[in-house]
Length: 69
Image (cartoon, rainbow, N blue to C red):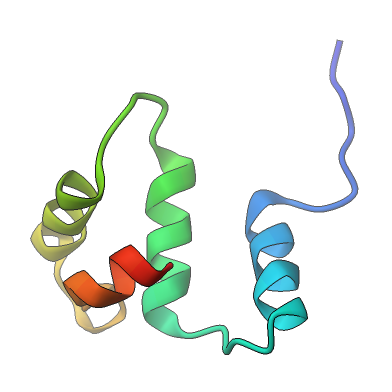
């Protein structure tokens, strides 16, 4: 059956950032969205390439942001 959860992965991540005093930025949201849309293993470089390929203002993410996030 289905299991209900109180927070989505994105909401949990936002809560984590807030608990550390970190801002919730568009690049961080883009990273989280991409991470939770994938169901296979990948590394940070692959994530960066995928985000850059998708382009767009919301998906502009630096290598440093990927690694820090």
